Length: 336
Image: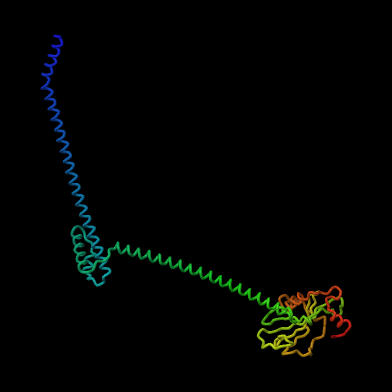
């Protein structure tokens, strides 16, 4: 127990002896800390002062730049106004357009711009003028493209309309041709004269009552077509009545021999008829030398094709396509 007390008293004595040293150390530490804080505060204050000074310089530069830009804009406006106003004085225009340097040039430009603004109405700047010009150019290009598009659309519409009109005209022409053909067939059904074709202002008809198969002279085994053709001009006078039927007032009659077997044609006679024909026809005598070969595309070739197409009863068997009346007239020499 005495020993523990001795230890405790020794410890307490050592603690009491070391207390001034700890206080001194703590005071020294506090002083060091205070000095460090003061130094940091000084550095912060110096940095803040530098930042403020830098901000002030930047503000000054910004203000100077803004002043210069405003002066330049005023100078440009003055030049634009001088360009648009020919009555402005040359001295004033020269003063506005003359280049300047430093603060004197800026102040001169500002004063000139202020004078111009007070003397004349405000004008557009070059940038605004250029912008307006670009807008006008774009509007012109847009209008030009719209005009080209509208013109192209109108051309296409016109082409389609023309095509439709041509198609309608072609359909109408075909319809009229079919109607004409139908009317011709109906008219020819009970008519003595059958329509062959129309050429060069004349309509060619075949007289079916007098067109027939007959033996070829000097060759009884071969037959030929004895054809009568009537030519009616399309612009002749008024028709006249004949046995209850209508016939033209003036026409032409042509007489042909046609040999389908040899592909030949022979012209015999032609007469002009006004009213009723006379029974006095002067024909040339039959001569084998008068047979003609057909020329493609000629009137004779067209007559040959049309007449042989209508003569269905080609000779070759029995009566050779001849009627009883033709046989009696040909062989018995009896005419009716």
